[in-house]
Image (cartoon, rainbow, N blue to C red; front, side, top):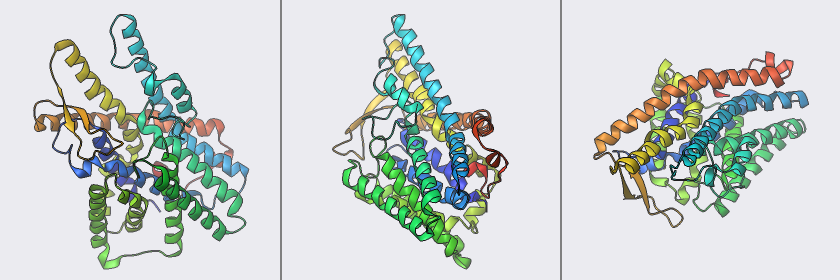
Length: 398
């Protein structure tokens, strides 16, 4: 079974996550939907639990399988993470050189969110386990840190508890889901929008929810028959409404349930939308989704924020403005400084340019970093079984 439609949504949602981070005055900036598409990260986590279960729920039976699984997970996420981390370190070295020649950067090199301490935790993939009080370095990578440890928990349960009883393993995952929800509901200051502080528990709740959905659909396959198109369009309408209205309110806690419903509707990929999503364009977008997600902060910083700051500083041209955020809370600033090119249509063009540049670059990082890096690590550290195994789920969505 290949989940073409579900994988394509990953590519689409990666672009929306990028848009929510773009501080540019354009027509979509202040809309409730764009301001809240941070919630699509929860789709990633839920889908990951669903897909990992599909591929490995019955394949981890000994320590060799466990190690093979961990190596494949590292091979999937680590090469691009380290590559982007190296890119950001290079930028800090440029800032250091500029400071040496008398140019004062806005933020001191290797300080704050780009400190040496946080560099070490990023290398170890522990940077979003509540260690820091801010997002660090390549800030989207917080989810990579949390999801890696969700992988380990999955493998431990499958290896040690599932042989005793499948029901006990499902009960364990259900308990872990409740634990994750309990922690973020009890302690997260911004409800579902928690990253460096309680992001692991957000991931844990979503990931285990995906595992449970896999188990449910395996035993109770769901078909919508003549209502398949209605179901697909209906769930997308529900997702858009949920993201728009939930924002950072307590309603955002429903994210794993909403995206679980979306997976239940699309995993059979029988409707009209699924056929569109199975086209070459959307499949490639799905292929590049991880790259889009991991490199978009670099484009936002270096195509919009940093050049604008340099132009304003050295040419005395004002290209930014302070705006009142529509979703301000007591724990979030009421205002933000964003790029303003003099009109929303100009902003639309800038946003389009940044998105296109990011997608085209993601195509290259997928080809030259993700795939070779994954294959190298599997060859170097994997067992013979992992090197020769064929997964029932395509590698692109593992």
